[in-house]
Length: 311
View 1 (cartoon, rainbow, N blue to C red):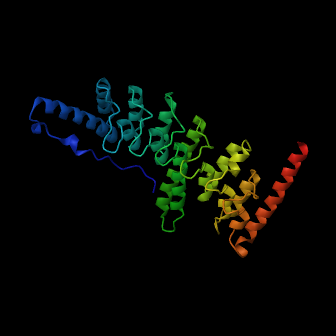
View 2 (view 1 turned 90 degrees about the vertical axis):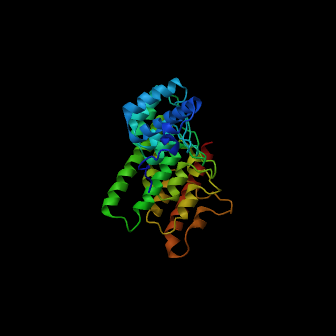
View 3 (view 1 turned 120 degrees about the horizontal axis):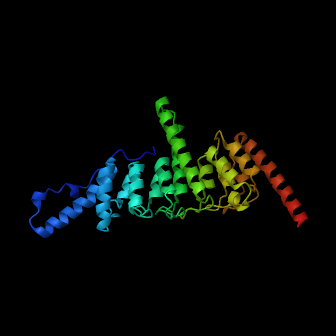
């Protein structure tokens, strides 16, 4: 389940008693370390007034972006703890919005991953320069993170053992993630960005998990602006190859039809020289898929001929 941490466990260093200090120099260091940690704790616990006071003091010491053992600054802790008011205060005080943790995750990545739309709205609305295409150490942009998190929720919603109450909770999280995706796109996040490891775009992500609602959303955003978007390859496969390989999924035919309607080319071959039609399951189960793809191939060839005639 894609959920934010329920709490924040402060590092043991934050609890060093003053009695343990033997010299004035050590006392100064210990108090300094304590101040660093206490800001993280205030941010995690939602203690806004205390966090703001500590932040102003740390700004004077040029340590507002000090990191704890997981590489998180107080701002990143506040984002993870879903504290939009403290996120606002820290950014206004001068916290670095581009700071990343040990996994390369920025405030945008974390808010998008956890589906914290209110937190994300705060970050985007303050007018500070933001790199919406920044990639974490997995090679994902914040938009990629939100889509992957939405896919994970979709898979969990499909589990047979999920109760009605759990379904309602998952549905709420799903809607929050959809809000995050829309916020990022409205702010200028590119649907054409590819991840570093697999070269996938958000289109490939939605198809691989049969996420038809997001697939429809991204296709409508593209709206034939870029034919390359629909036919781009990831590990040699187009989104149509992936859709044809969704054996027996209830949304498979609709996904394939959507892709064809938006310009997917069924004649493109992957690295194994296979066309999407070759990815369909054998026997009767794949007959309807093959029929769809054959119709699409004829339509694609007809459109291509018309374009050539015009030119």
